[in-house]
Amino acid sequence: MKNINILLIGLGNMGKVHKRIIENTKNVSLVGILDSSFNDNLSAENKVKRYKKFSQINFDTEKIDGVVISSTTASHYDLAKKILDLNIPVLIEKPVSTKIDEVIELVNISRVNNTILRAGLIEIYNPIFEHIKKLNLKDIISIHTFRHSQQVGKERKLENVIHDLVLHDISVLFYLFKDLNLNISGKLTSSKNRVIESSELLLNHNKVNIFISSSRQSQLKIRKWNILTCNELYQIDLIKKKIDIYKAGKVKFSSSNLVSEKSNLSTLSFSNHPETAQIQFNAFISNIIDSNIDNEHLEILKKSHEFASQVNLH
Image (cartoon, rainbow, N blue to C red; front, side):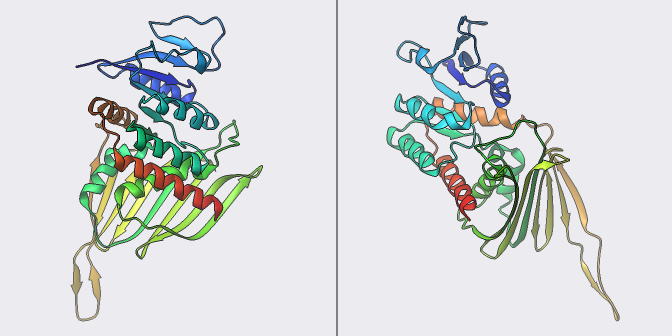
């Protein structure tokens, strides 16, 4: 099998995660890292070339099969466009951009050039949601999602909580339901220095109510979904990597009362599955090997960013 050479752009918090994943993947080599924080006196480290500026990379001579972009959101569009124009596959952290016209342009370039573009919408690779999708749930009454993060010292000025957190849950909804037609019924937000830090959204899709709660001002990290159907309640804990399934008990009739038996509880654990970041990167590598741009992923990428833009304008 051919070895796949990867260039990593950006060595911040997510960049370090990508670096570890790349280095731990078989038949994949990290051949270069671009980060503006590097010193001017650059040298190779463990055969990995280091670059401070994009212009220092000679794509004509360097054998680069794919690029992972994990730099600042403001730099995403320019970097991705340059690399896609070179017909080199790109895995880019979310949000791809906070400007929807830039997102659409990158998706169009990917399709016209037949060059792979994947976004770091990491939850759509989560084995839990893969399992939920296979269930093909019917008669859904409501979906509640909770994605709360503890306050961080570094204030984000470009992407608000919609692009930072809500985008994850929206992308999962588009992954689970191909015919998804979301309408915004209500929106409450809390801002700090004119940047939205918390959001409560009420959406609906074909009479299904969807409540999305997201915050970067929480005292506790929460990653949970509740999916209620006519006969089951699926309580998903993404941190504990499990699903608790409550199935309605039988209803008994007596002369004076209507009594329901206690719900039956079963638990599915996903703790033994590979980490989601690894699954995401494996999908990128598979696309490179198969020369497959994955139109389904491009649609999820486009629609989820379009909806995030719509929420911000609402």
